[in-house]
Structures are given as structure tokens and as C-alpha cells.
Image (cartoon, rainbow, N blue to C red):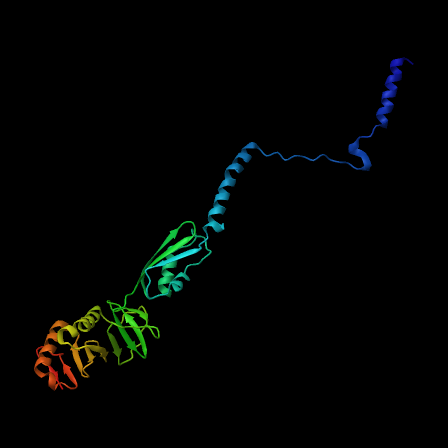
Amino acid sequence: MTHFQKQKRSWYRSRRRYRSPLLSAGRVVKERSRIKIPWVWALKLAKVLPIFGVVYFVFFSKFFAIQDVIIEGNSYIPTETIAQQIPRGKNIFLFKISSAKINMMRQLPEIRDLAIYRGLPNAIKVVVLEREGRIAWETSGERFLVSSQGEVAKRVMVGESIDGMPLIIDKQNFPVQVGSVLTTASFVSFVSNVYDQMYGVVNLRPTYFEVDETTFDIILHTEAGYYIKFNTMRSSRKQLENLKKVLVEKGGEVHEYIDLRIDGWAYYK
């Protein structure tokens, strides 16, 4: 046997004794495969992820959640009563202004109109226009403020002053709701004019008005102890001038009332 043959036989023997580490312990060990993402998909993913991040930040983070509510223009309605209508914590972009306005007008009939503004990042501003009170109306023991257009502006709370405002007492106790139309603008104007001008014309202070079955006729009680009947469909200035004539000519004979409702005539008792 040549030297070359001996080396070849030794190499085959050593090869039969060798065991691969992948086959050790009597089990097959597989190499982990690597997931290969195509570069095109990786590029698309890199473009989409920032968009998702922006969407989350704008619509779901607390940065744009409503925290501050600013109320302006209110005098009768408490600020917190209005502010409670705005959902604090809601995303400012998901807050629907039109729906909120409709709901607030329904819940707070004392408001004539309002506007809502977004203030980034987390503030809502509400500017309200209340129904202004021009006269006070009393019915069934409750008092209400009535606007110059004849709309019921608000309920007068116990202890709330109505000084400087004419008071009309409804002898029929007609039911009243805030936000409803109670009377006409011409009636409110007539009452206001008589109340404001009477002392300057006849040096007589009014105390309160009364209405019965209709607002066409109205009774004004005075500090002198007698009352005066007016026709609200006629000129207030003309009837005050007639009242002045009666008081100048027959003032000492008036003890109960003066009736000015018929044009050109005056009755007294």
C-alpha cells in the first residue's frame, strides 16, 4: 500500500467519526430565517407612519382637548350656567359648533342669539346676546322681564330688584314661559313711554300697571292714591297731555280714577 493510499484511508475514517453540531443531542436544529421587507414597502411605511402620528396628535391627544371656556355678553344668565353647556375634555376639532348652538338656545331660552368661536389649542369662546328686559310682568305670584319686542326674557328671582322698570300685574294670571312672545312691541313701547314721561308732564309718580282681559286697556296706579285708565292703541303723548288738562282744571275733584281711553274726552271720579 502506497503512502498516498494510506493518507486517503485515514481521511475517510476521520470523516466518519465527525458529527455536525446541528445534529447533536439527537435533534435537528434549524437556522432562523430572516424576514426580508421589500424596499418599496419599507418606503411606503415610512411615509404612512408620520401621517398616523399627526392624526393621533390632533384628534386623540389631550393637547387639543377643550379646557378653557370663555363667556361674554351675559348679564342675567350666570356664567357657569352657560359654560356647563360646553363639553370640557372633548377634542376641539370634533366639537360641533352648530349643534352646540342649537342645544344652548333650546336649554337657555333667555338667550336671543349667540356665537361660538374656537381658540386653539384648547379654548372655546361663547358670546351671547340676551333678551333684554324692558318691563316687568307679574302673573300668579311670579315676575318676568319682557323685552322691547314683547318676548319673555327671563324669570325674576326672589330678591332680585326691578327698580326703574315699569311693573305690569296680570289680573287674569295668564301662564308665561321664558322665550315665548307675551305681548306686542307697541304695548311695551306705550307702557315705557308713560312710565318714563309721566312725572315730567304732570308731576305724578306711577307705581304699577294692571291689565285684565286685554292689553288694549291698561290701568296705571299712582302715588296720589287714584288710578288712570289708558288706551294702549292711542298716542301716549296725547293722553298724557289730556291728563295734564284734567289735573289742572279738575285736580281737586279727582279721588278714585281718571279715564282717558276715549279720544277727546276724559272722565273722572
